[in-house]
Image (cartoon, rainbow, N blue to C red; front, side, top):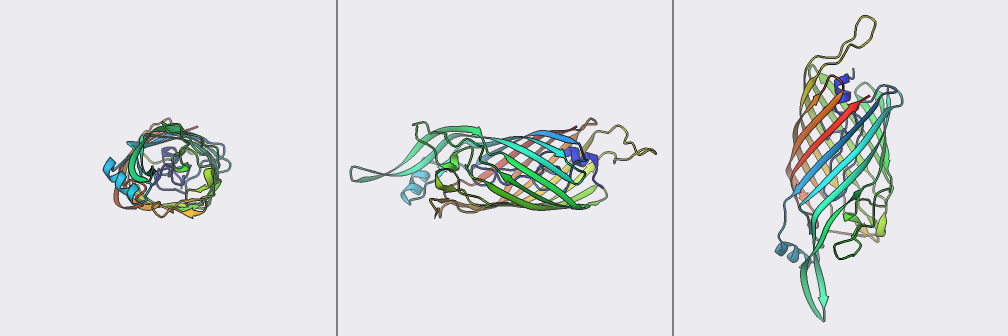
Length: 330
């Protein structure tokens, strides 16, 4: 049985995390005990959920000398102080088994720098170019989740090219697509999720795959996938109903969770030429907690640590990721 505290706990963002590059991994809207693993939970028919999510990723910063050395090796590498991904989402229970949702992201990077290999008057030089700060609305995601059986759901959707793709550097040059808030491509998303309870413990496993299409500036950012498992522990009264089947007033509750997620990003291609230095994979460990009020408002937070990563040299490795979300069930 899907508990009210579980649905309200993450009503909009079940798995929404920035991955390796400047664009986020596939997302799942519609409930989970954790924050980053797709879940099979769906809303009751007619129910509406809304929420805001913020995720801040701090990179393992690289020096100017390192960026210049990479440029000398013909690797177009970049760095920034941080990457901020935020999103506003809403979900609707079309039926008890089918939930549809939409998520509009916002993205920001500060102090973006890139190494460049230049030819000047017959000579060659490597330099670091200050590209400045980049921010704007990203691509809208439309998702659907169908619960085929108790604890099992199929997920599908599409990322539409609604984001901004005309951002310029501090010098007025059009930034590459990987640095733009939007991609300019239509990207189908497919996945599945499973969950089972062991008393107050819930085990969740889920995965999502995003097929990248060709977008702005003849750039295909590369397919990306996110799979993970989560174990959560509920603290508080369980849902129950009175003799007439009417649910009484809710109770405040806590959930503690731990998640292990694997994120993979394929190499990007520009004008159908694969960029060998791009792409990568990372394994995140994310402990966290969620507090759900008696009225159905949920506050959640987690800290993610990369326990293993293999990132292409064009992007810096990740150091830590902080995630916060606020959601409400209506």
